[in-house]
Image 1 (cartoon, rainbow, N blue to C red):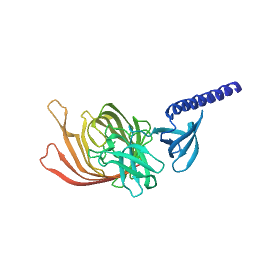
Image 2 (cartoon, rainbow, N blue to C red):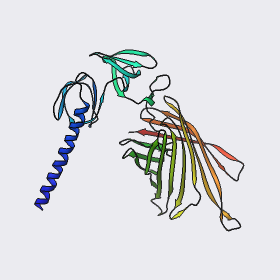
Image 3 (cartoon, rainbow, N blue to C red):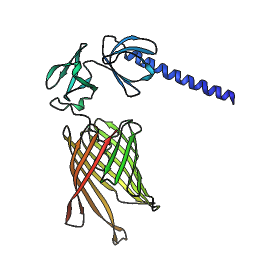
Image 4 (cartoon, one colour):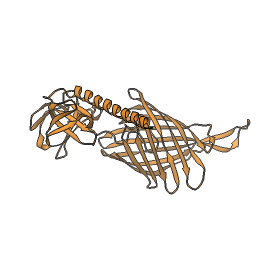
Length: 351
């Protein structure tokens, strides 16, 4: 037993040493210029901006523009971004103005930022509240910065094939009674679940991949049960999404089930989203659900009709939240009349 414990301890130390060496080698190659500015994101959530004063085997002496000199161990670093003219940044000032572009020059008290809409501007370091790296898709056609869509992986209720990133999550509430939480375990796998008060519980795992530019494929399961009855129900589904986080269209096909009985007709969803402005998007979600009648055809096959559920509305967005206000309608395939005007309200907070 002692020999096994010794082997286990030695194995753990070896793995830690290999991991530590990997960090040292990776960041030793990335932080290779004492004249440039770096953005260093730490594992504890803090961020440093400044220059490398001195580099050792397992740590650096770093001169942060706000707190001065600090020693940073490689093992505590999550991400390193070098300031150069190939990386896009958004700079938020203390007066809540935002400017996006490339940092072309720095001095101890000033930053030169090349923007698309304003040309090159100069910002005083004392006036800057926050600097963040962004992607090109966060810049609109006239050069203004739009924060990332906080709720791109879902429409009103139905999901898209676009996944949450690893470590992202959100809480979603509809009509106060429906409460859901989803979390990205990896970039391609999301786990979620919730409760519809007072007694319906459900889980919603989903996988999704970007198989080509702006083409996403995914699959998932909605499984629900109750605390009052052993009956379970849900949908097994597949998804195909075309577009970006801000503008996309999704086709979903799924088969519903109740207990051990699976429907032999698919549920089809056609959903879309387009961002109209920095804080506003138009969203539509449409379900086509087969309903089995009490009648049979001449071959004794059950006859199905279809119920369409149509929803269209607006999404009001902030960096960490989304608020949906929409109208929904119902129409059966064998009826000429349709009912439209059911209000739908929900709220999402991203964490």
